[in-house]
Length: 252
Image 1 (tube, rainbow, N blue to C red):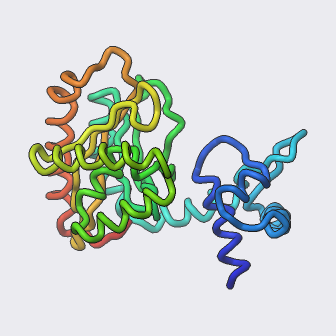
Image 2 (cartoon, rainbow, N blue to C red):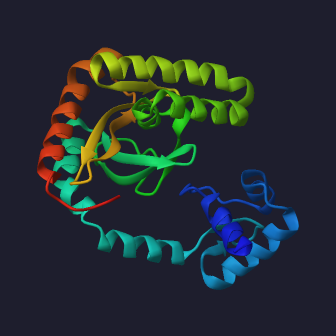
């Protein structure tokens, strides 16, 4: 069981990012000893879950994770239910649209659509974003009880060290905005010149809470524009998705 757990941890270290990783970076991200990482990456290459980058000692995800992910997508009703709302909104606003759920101290995109008119953010379905630096993360933390939120803050402090104080301050500001206005924003909190704005949405019979967001690179866009043009449509589509999926039985 330990070997399986470590193998999954190595795969999770890639976090859907396009950059290849070497053993040293995998060790840093997972905390698994270097000798064990070397054995695990060799096994994952043999099984097709990783592949070597030609001419280097780096690794990228192989074809097998894609096959597993596609099997999941084929089995879920969620993407088919939300696409008629999320893709047109992305096209209308020239943004990306996404649904995210918590994944340890990160947020995982379980639905993602983008307008062809925007600069690529190298994100996509399955991308993992830091909970403490993104609007989708702020929205999830807002949804927690006070005690559960404080427990997450303690973990953020332990992980982020000196940076945690500022990040928790930003989270608290976002929580206040969600309490007062029903949305939050993150402008350059994670990536320079990139904004994201998010609202909570509860989908399906289970009323599963997810973070619903719009985002893009800030070319010719300021905070006032986001408030007047992006957020009202984001809220409106969130309500429409909730209503349209209220009788559907699915989980992300």
